[in-house]
Image (cartoon, rainbow, N blue to C red; front, side):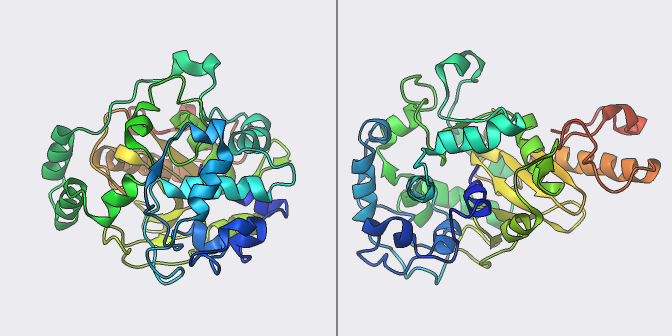
Amino acid sequence: MKCFTCTLFFRGYLDYSKLVSYYWPEFGKKGKENITVDMLLSHQAGLSITDGTIDIRLLRTHPRKVEEFLENQRPIWKPGTAYSYHVITFGMYVDVLLRKADPKHRNVDQIFREEIALPFDIDIHYGLPRSELHRNSRFVPLSLTNLIKHSLRSFSLHQLKIFYTLLNPWSMFMKASYSGFDQELTFAAYNNPDLNQIPFTSFLGFGNSRSLAKLWGILANGGTYKNTTLLNSSTINTLGTPLTSGRSKDGLFDVAVGRGVFFLPTPQGHLSFGHPGYGGQAAYADVKNNVGIGYLTSYLKSFTLGDDEQFLEYEAAFYECLEKYMKETTLPNSFSSQKEMGKLDESVLPTKCEDSNSA
């Protein structure tokens, strides 16, 4: 969950306005001296592409070597002047930053487990415990066939641009996708029990859509669940404030970007904040309606930014049900009383919507 830096911000351990080098002194060289935490979290640091790659297993065996590798990188554009999705390197840099900023110097998996997963019963892991291996669905990388099928079904100039970008190994986005760690081991990590235990927030997160919806639902309802506070309203407002917008440096995005989150339109027209994922996944908080959405699929599509056709159909059905629910119930416009955040009580949904799927 790329927004959980806000838990350290909420506890006063991390200041978004400070330089990254304030927490990580060795970072401040080779053109990175003036990069702030805000720039890093909003993909404005210019560090999406690395000079060379390293073995992902070093995260577990020699984390200092990973730090040194990152410290010796140079930005590929002037930090703070543009944004471009840091596909792999976002987690590499932010995971180190969190460990440096945390007073206990915990790794990201421990921070997430102790601050979020255990207190709020969120079934998500960074690095998959061996005890959970039997629950993990096998990862099958996006195929060229699915890429072509999705591009044809969702025919548009934007999809054609994505199709061309994904097939062009020299595009900025694809260079970023193959940066950071050696790719052979990176793709093997999803299914290899010896590798998928490595905690890494860019892609080695394991969970289910119900837990994603619950987590974002807690944020959409003020940040408190069962008398325990995850984030206060001020921190949620900070998380829900864009830092940059417009066309991205790699040309693929035209959205507003915040601190580890993207801002995407709901079917009702207002913006939500959350994050899309590889192959069509999506999760976000709709603060206006006090709901969280979580969508995961093992049928991977083209690279999407919350515009996967199947997701949009489920999303539209969910909001249709939500609007009917709001009209037909006397409850206030809040679901904080629900036993599970991010999940409506199906017993009170209108009959017409009973077959709709939502997380």
